[in-house]
Image (cartoon, rainbow over all chains, first blue to last red; front, top):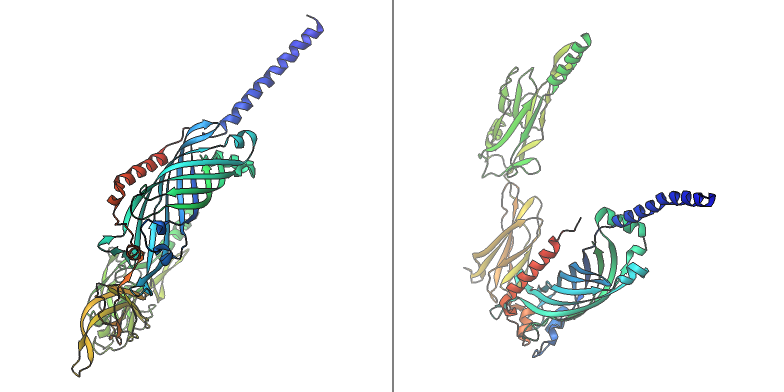
Length: 242
Length: 303
């Protein structure tokens, strides 16, 4: 064996452990990340039901009682990821609560000494897609997304100390509808990558986002008579992938 | 060996010195370490349990002090409840029955003759051990060894009469806001009908509604009244002993019909009739969505 060949063999033998070490390092990096299977979102915003747009209504009761203002609404959404490839798709369920207080009125139209309130619990089952491929592969921290969902909104109206009763009807019920949502989320991991890794290894939270989304919802029993809880609203919140 | 003996002596003297009596009473009768009784309950029995630790070198007295001091033996004007002899190691706990009438009798008073508030302190007192390296000795003076401090308070005085409540008419109800006088722990509000008085004027008739609340909650809502009918409303103060003040002056109020948002909505021609079934199987739908939520939240991560 020539000296050159011998040096070549020695160099190859010396490189083998390093090659193996590189492989181990790569595996360690993969194992540090916990599986990503779903998400939880917390959001809040104003919910202004389009009650006054109900066909056949000869007045603006919502505006008269609540000053045309929105209900402050909080929502929590749980998502399950069914597809993770070029973006992420899955299904989600959200539940929220919103209320608005106003002053009851006397027969003369003057304000009464009692308060009245409208309370809603928006429940939504949706399918969603978010384009997070660019965020994870190319480092662009913006994730656009969309949702399409079925909505059911239990509601009730109070006056004084209890649920209002008028014309023999108890003011409580539920309305069906549908809604579409579009939004964009900002990936917070880019601000503190090390903290994000710790968040994952300690708590299993893969990614954190803040987001803004716009919802177009028709909640009127698909055009049926009765309370129109449709709304067009912006909401803002925090999302955690886990 | 000598060192062990000294250690044992020190340990023994410390143990001997730990003479304590602990009192306890149910929260239903003990408020802020006070058991307050009214004249109506002057002869009623109030039970306090006690437990003690340590040995006795002199008798242990459990008694009611008429002057609030416990570091002495009971005097003739105090009410002795129990005396435990020195060396008694079997009587370590028990129940004391406190009666304001008996405590008053020791001071020469009766439930009727005592017209102002009078306090008696529940005491446990004895001579403490003094520990030292050559043995134990009994202190000459008597010390108080009972905890916590509990007072039996005889309160025959009703609280001051409250001022007339402020009344607002609600739908089939009245709202009354009261001012709490000093010493009141509860407030009561009564709604009475108005009746024609003997002098031709208007007086108060029968009570139709009443409510009691803690003094911290000064606004009352009295339901079940008739709209358009004028009522008389008065307040009564109640103290910790249960004494009720005389009723306040009355304030008149009239319930008045009002419409909440739903009434206004129906008045504007709204078609909503309410009810989950109005949503077309709403309860079922709600249950399905709730189930989906539970399924999503209960899904576990793969490890």
